[in-house]
Picture 1 (cartoon, rainbow, N blue to C red):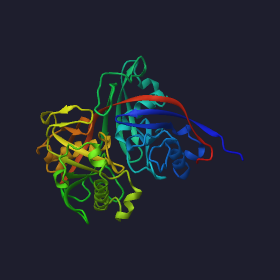
Picture 2: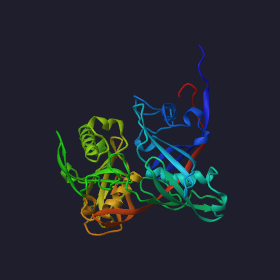
Picture 3: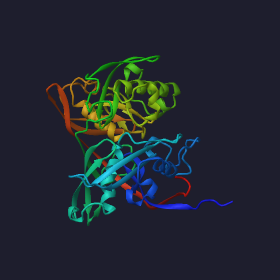
Picture 4: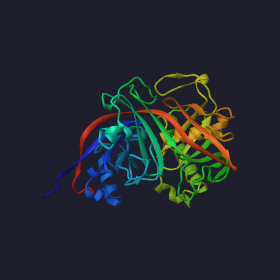
Length: 396
């Protein structure tokens, strides 16, 4: 009996922020996978090691968490004012499903570095020493991201002393600007607040009725008050992920919130869009101990935020959700803003299970509509391995 040989595909395994993923140049993919569709999805599923009923992704590059089950495809951009097109795939662990509906803000930090190292940026725009500006078109959501990448001796500088909670070792700081971050999701009409309200009453049959801020910024996100759910806002992963009833509750809330936001028409459709929207809960600042044992004082933060991704509480914070947090915090009257003390603000430092993160955004009100021109935060990125990834030739 003959069996197919393995196919070698040039790839780079990178950490970006608190996530990891496999990065490809579009031109390096097999021809069948250079276009969106079943072949591309099948290829990426096999690369990452999904679907895996054991939930471990042992036979692939995935790390068995939503933060490490990701793939990125980059190509030179033909769009005016942009250098590269960045396409992100969130890959389900136990299902044969790739979600293309949103961005990964954490891996966005690695896009500029990869693009420079892969020769996708005009060499004249990369200084010998200094900071290179990479203009990224985020193809999933149709938004612009500006990455400021440190350069030393003409190459990307990856090492440094910038510490990011949720990442063990220091690295070089990469500043990201998310321009006009209000997401233009199908059915939501591009509105930052698709229901037209800063705070809604969200009725979830069988669960309860909750105050909710539902916002399209960075990634569609549903914010709830921690106290209304019976939480303090200081919870670590095991408190949520070890409670099947809590996970079921959050998924039910997410499904009904998605309908209210106009992202889907019926709650049953939520299972096909696992990446969006996100669900998060907020609380006023208080002392707590992070997952690393770090003592965090209430005086050092503006509020607590905990967010779920792909059905689990995130170990830190998704970059796109951080954009939503910064945007909502800048708008007086949202639940995020109120948890942070209310009033006008241009930045917040919030806690997450692994520590703290600062994100800035400036909001403007004109003709009764809120807008945010950009949100800013710092992350870091590093190449972990580069070469070829291999998959069986009959996998796609």
